[in-house]
Image (spheres, rainbow, N blue to C red):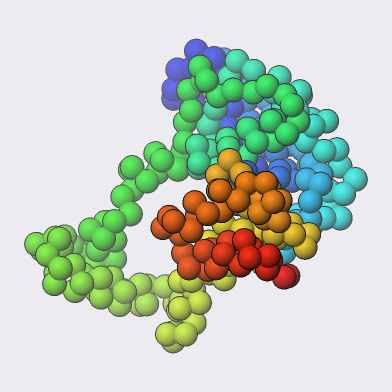
Length: 258
């Protein structure tokens, strides 16, 4: 590899039960360690997440409840994983916003100390996006093979957007050819365990659970009893109407029904 390493660099990837870094669990962990002498070590393990794997997650990674029900839980692997990562810098694709946060939450639940401090973190997705900008001008250059004249003029930008759209339809025959199917393509259906449109509240079994902030993982019913001030705070902030409706009704004693 054309980079000088002063200590091992571990690239890691997680398959999980969902996209919440606070609540969702690891079902598969894989790490590839590149040593300064260019030798490699790797581990890949399946993990029982102790919660059900939603169908939308299975559709992505192919792992079902039956595939992991007899596997060890994360706590049983925690020390081994920590030791594998000890003294290493870390890399991955979207590692900063997702994988590391999920991993840190798992270590915390397992009561095993783990820190990303004093490590270099390489996010390959960040490198990719910086080398390949994904803005309107970049899309126009890719699809129309020319620069936008007078970029950031509203009229020129909207015309450029239409040109890109036409080129996308011509270049990608797999795209739907009618508005309703394109709508579905652009707006993925929310995961079945989300209660509201942004997943601020989710179902765990048949209970409504908070899925953000440091209250993530707490039952909505328990929040009403013990920490209603946080729920009242939500009502004063810029949350979507469906979130505020859930909170308002919960404070009145009416909870979401699955």
